[in-house]
Image 1 (cartoon, rainbow, N blue to C red):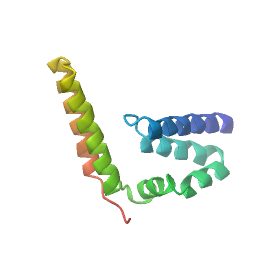
Image 2 (cartoon, rainbow, N blue to C red):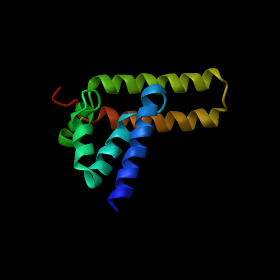
Image 3 (cartoon, rainbow, N blue to C red):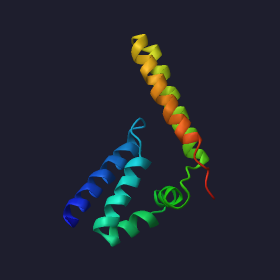
Image 4 (cartoon, helix red, strand yellow):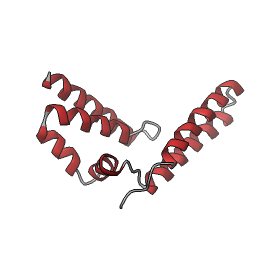
Amino acid sequence: MRFIWAGLGCLSLLCGMIGVVLPLIPTVPFLLLAAFFFARSSERLHNWLLSHPTFGPSIVDWQTHGAVSLRAKRMATLACAFVLGLSVLMGLKWQLITIQAVTLSCVMLFLWTRPNGPR
């Protein structure tokens, strides 16, 4: 079973790394998922992820405080606004734009109601 958890952790980590390069793919949710899987499979990989200088602070803030940094909230808001604006500029059907707007609004509501954290 540990190999399955480790494999899922590696897959989640890979998806998170893709999200670093592609701006519309979320990074942190995949890293949180990888931390969850690594905690069940490999203490070494879990500790490596939590102590990573770039990704570790976001994971630790979420695990200890349920917090999302103000910078991350701003970046996510800009990305959502960009996606919605691009959909309007592309002339997508109003039904699709409405679905996107409602979904993105729910995401933003959840995100902005999280604490900023200690950092």
